[in-house]
Length: 299
Length: 150
Image (cartoon, each protein chain N blue to C red):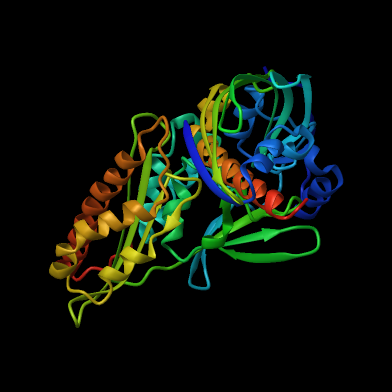
């Protein structure tokens, strides 16, 4: 049962930050509440005061500005799943958002809330890791940008300060001739393994100019797998394809998988290998299609 | 969840053994142990274990029973406790083996830890990682404490 709490409804980021600073550990920012309220109902955590930030205007916009897609942290999964801008520029993100949890979560859950709660079995963090994403965090007196790679500190822990709010997610536009795939595996709503692969193709040299790979859900935080990325860079598609099994093994080992109720460590590492193979073929398939049609491909 | 740790200590077996039974010194090496007490020396002890993962804080008041004590070589103990606030229970079976010669000792721990209830449903893997960290920190703290003359 949900215990009694006070609800504050600030209308500005500064006001929300002040409240968080004033009430310290007894207060928590709250947006969609899909994770936080569930944990509170279960009695796993209790806050005397929730700071409802949904009434702060302007934090739910999705726009293209200065070469980046700027996503307001209060954008719901549903909004992102139906965004024409994202559909045109970042369709892989749209597909991921269409499959986050369930319809109730997508309706009210926000991207900023999902990232800030840092639940290990979540999709967005893994995908955003391969996109050069930067997160904007604000508090009463300052504003800073955090590279996605530095945002997650551990399970349920981010580098946000107690009185800081995540306000925007900046995703740079991906170059033409690049391909982005996010795949996940799980038998319940929470994914057991998530994998994101970004490939950029050098058409003149017929090779992979850039590769970024991230694995999530298997350990405390999603992580980039630099060791496997390096195997693809500068290689032709055929040569890279011949290395995919080895890259999968490396990615599995480097993913920091922990055995749990979703499966053993070995099992998860195996699923990483399988997903990497599929993602690679899917990404190359998209690149070839784009090449034939001379169309531009952005994820 | 099963954990195994082993540490080499520059110190005699007798010194290590004595340390293991000195509750006040011993608990300073157990991460998250806030209080400990002796109910019946050599047999029954109590401890309050507090841990935090992100926003989640758990408090397990534990009762620890020593079920086997083979002087200077083996201790077997069982511990259990509940956190009623978060509706979770923890059970631990611990085996401690001590070997040594002269001024060198080898201490090994085998712990079987079960966490039941809502906490386990929330994040079994996270608990496992945390428990592993706690065991590592504990082993290092014991080594430091025994080799540091404190």
